[in-house]
Amino acid sequence: MQAIGNGIISEGIFSSNIGTGGQIATTITKFVFDPKLRTSTFAHVLPEC
Image (cartoon, rainbow, N blue to C red; front, side, top):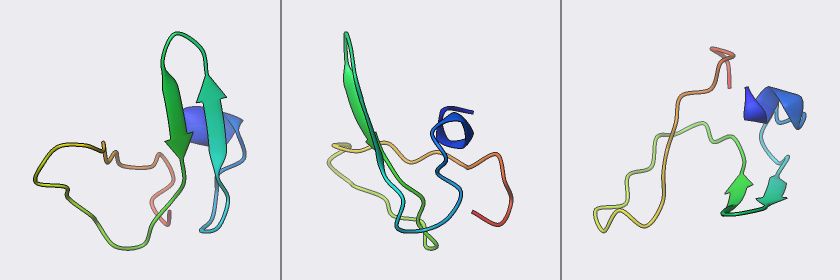
């Protein structure tokens, strides 16, 4: 829901949230896994994203 609230509904749109922790979010078309666990990948609420 954070992605929807920030208007991240297609590739090329990014958001930066700064608070107690920081996040940069975007959508990708291909799943990416970091074996060193430096990033988090979540499913988007919109199936086409």
